[in-house]
Image (tube, rainbow, N blue to C red):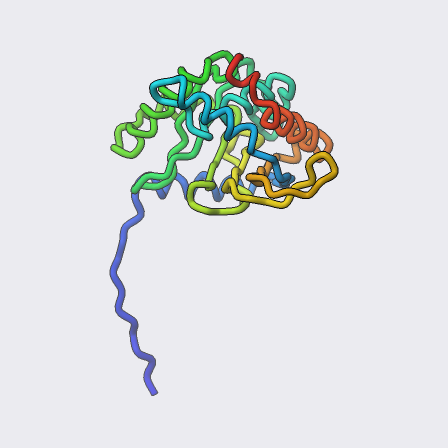
Length: 232
């Protein structure tokens, strides 16, 4: 019996999706990637956001808070704020954080430059502007350059945890899952707390498990006691 030919509709790859494909293929083929995951109590961060929403005209998003927290922690861990090539590791002087934005054309990576020295209001304003530009197809290439570290947050999509792909020449990326009630032990008692999985994906040429564990531990401490994020 002759095999029936299936009908189909052709959908051409967009320029952005072609670029994403080439970049991710380079990443998985050339970077020895491994990841660490931890579950973080997000109740303090949620309380801080609620407080800021009441005191500011437009409060920061969870992503804004994470960008600031990661930027502050990166000051202590320069190995994760770096670019890597086959011959050397370039430790960056500025702390520039990229963040993933989903658009109809594909995922774009706007960059918040000097995120460690900007306050939350400045970060929130910049992220809103760049997200609007990205989704309108007007985000300039210059606004997607210079990041030493990237955050990819799929929490709003309901994803519990995931390991994103490093954006070369960067050496690390953080995957953020959804904030959901979880059973945590607090003061030797099991209780339901809103928490999220954070997954740090690293380039093994630049760092090892011990450094990654220390970075995640410091980030967790920052999120559990987030008042310094608003003060910094």
